[in-house]
Length: 265
Length: 248
Image (cartoon, rainbow over all chains, first blue to last red; front, side, top):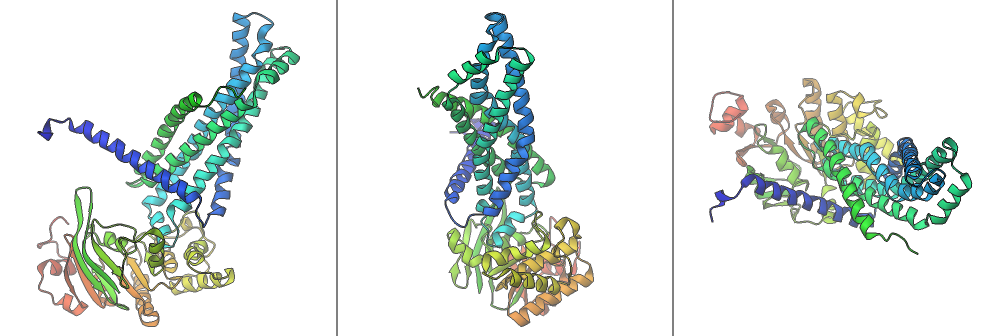
């Protein structure tokens, strides 16, 4: 068969895709294996927990508050328009369920991707092009255990915490809009929310967030480790991290929503 | 001590090493010269396990290192100290933390002892009172000297110097040459030095090897290299634009 007949650019794109998928797969396997191997880089893990968790609180607070307000607003409008005046108080469970199961985990995932995932790619990418990763190796540190594992663990642990925090802020913001600003009946709103919102709704959102954490850390570290070509290369890695991780979060979210049961009752 | 046999390495379609053969004896200083991009740094990165060859073998103290597992390789890297071309200091750490990094991983020394070694290592490279500075506060030459202090701090048996005199003023460069000689005489350290600087090469080398088109094309003492009849080596050591070397 004449190979020149093949559409070469498409062939190379496909091989590039599988090459990169293989790289990411290997990094994932190595990192998950190294989580259970000593020595653990405890100091770096604590620093990453602070960087990813504590320092993301302001951005998560703002995002969750305005997410909750706007979701509260649209739910109010929806009930008012289609069911009629007085029915707005029944929107409480919808606001809480929508926020805790879908909106807050996704918003937190996307915000952390922009704030932390890009920073991971930039930091590790700069270390790569200035030979600092080679220096780590030559001085007895495994770059995967030193750089990737603490970031992976910190994201895995902190994303659910941030999401739970965001749930509280978002649900409170929905309450503020409906009950305090629009004068919806407080007792009916709260009773319906407590009656129909299940613990599983919140927990399934937290499970999603843990998966998003894994996605953000692995893609940020992977792109950082494959950075090359100076400052321009680091910039490219940072941009790719935000794009790939954001899209991956939306895709993973769909499949998790499909796989996780709607209710445990 | 180090034996390299038929080493090949390519990056994509670019063949960088095409059958390097080289033997480095214990306690000697081997200087590897060659054009920029000729694969000198690639060669020393193979010695420490940072790169895996496409083909060939490397023996360090009789152990073939190219097929070692991570844990076994760690025992071999302990023998090496590596001075990187740009220093490669960790941006997020102070000078003292940079130098202590290898010591905390390779030894069980107390923090006081590590502090003493850090100061002594800095003094060896002519630096004092910089322990608490961050790398961005240092000049290019100072970074390089801190990188050297980090490489020698845990007393490795073999030190690999990647362009030790590049980016440093001539007086400091000569001081580093002296340091390489002192390390050899006092501690019997084996050194592999990569350089373009022929003054430095003649000063520190027991033997000089020239890497050209992926192979070692000449090897000998500084006097033998000076007297060589190989036109490629002659062009390189005399720094002539005209000659058989292409693509410079």
